[in-house]
Amino acid sequence: MNQPAEIDAAPIHALLLVGPGCPHCAGVLEGLGSLIKEAALGRLEVVNIAAEPALARELGVRSVPWMRIGPFELSGLHTPAELRHWVALAAREDGMTHYLADLLATGRRAQVTTRVQQDPTLLPRLVDLLGDPESGLSVRIGVMATLEELQGSGRLTGLADGLAPLTRHGAPRIRADACHALSLTGAPGIRELIRPCLADPDPEVRETAADAIETLDQGSTEP
Image (cartoon, rainbow, N blue to C red; front, side, top):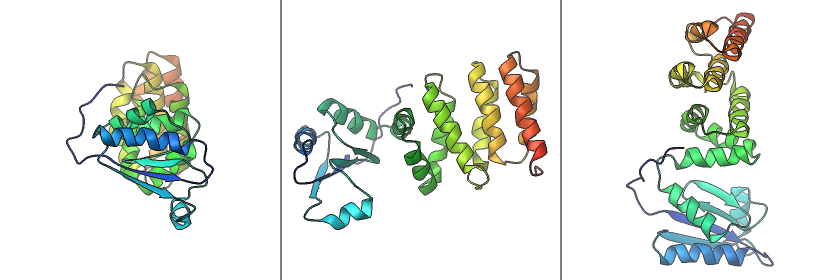
């Protein structure tokens, strides 16, 4: 991924949930404490869930250490370098895109689906991942599976404008993914966006485009 500029915004805040007998909580607390001392973090709130179990229930936390760094929710042992990495990403405009990619790459697609259902403004981040040549296979599969799960929900129609340029991308894999993703959006005019790919020089793109149009023809009528 490219390296966009940092966000000119308020300091990053963090929340850490710990518990008695936790073997990793002290290390994570120490790592976050160092970032506070360096002013990389503006605020750190530490809650012992044995004393305040209601917060853990509210957040759906079942094990500690659990932390929220800016918009990112993380759990388990994280080294000081990893914590610094997430704090730095929290200050970047594309930080959430990296976070979603990490969730998909590590098999936590359910969390991605939950996040985009709660905040549909995150959906264009998935388009960004499809259009990034550096996105690995597990990320691309995860993005497509998430879009397929949301198909018919009405949440995907706004993605067509972002997906359409990807049908002309230099990488055949991205053009093919864009054709399939477009077919899931339910947006008006998607057949005409996919149709040029029927003459694509790459056979996989042509096949994906044909399959996408066939699926649309067999399904509900496009507006």
